[in-house]
Length: 380
Image (tube, rainbow, N blue to C red; front, top):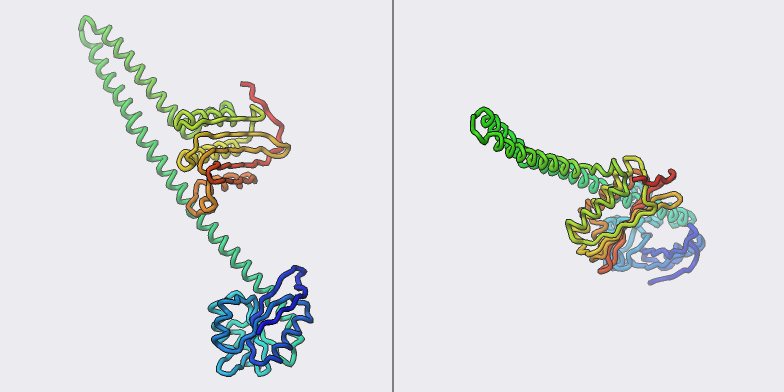
């Protein structure tokens, strides 16, 4: 048997409460529902009086609240409580009975019941329902917060592991370049110097000319070694970032990306020159590098548009590609550590970042940086 009542929810919100009523007496059930109507609780109720009907209602009706008599023919309240705890653990369970002694009432609370109300004191029912729903909502919110916190911890652990892996990979790469390239160049210079020393000691008629040719070759090798050293240093931190500032460094990186990948880059900066503190400058540059890396790996794009502009209270840095478009699943995937790294960098200076994508229409990364300093135009 089902009843409907359209009244007002106590928290001033329009909400229809789904109440499952386990009661074998139709008159007692009507008294219970009458008390709820008096309290101006908006609800839809469904009454059952057998174990099979109760089990089916738990699965199909999905109640927000369960009100149960304790003693029913062939079925008892503790069994009902056990079933409800298993199938709808977040729904409050209140015993409404005329035969519940104090010891038994305490036992039901220990077993997971939210409260108990005697049928002779139904005036307590509405306050009990209010409290039960409020506590249930708090439990749901607490569980959600705990789940989100755990997910954040998992992402943080994954990000920490990724950063450690990147650090070790970078060290290994630099070590290989130093060993293979710089080491080879220095070893070559050592042999050349030994050869030159022996030639200078000899009395060969063309020794002077041969030595000059060897010195010229050594200069070439030295120049090559210097270029390699600059390349390694630039990959670690571009000197242009310190010498000319963020805008020129971003433009240089976009040009280098375009030459390396063939993806066309358009860079727009308003104003053309901008000076920030080292922390924000480095963070924005690394965000740009990470975004370009994601575009090269995943976007299948042919064009990238970069825009850096100043608003009254913030800097807006936008990178937009015309690729396949990032999906919602990719945005919130635990393994999307590149995006997580960008978020962490932005949060470090109190900014915010928005990722948006449409299938086949590309992806846009928008970074907003708080800014209140005077603009400084580049003079170079």
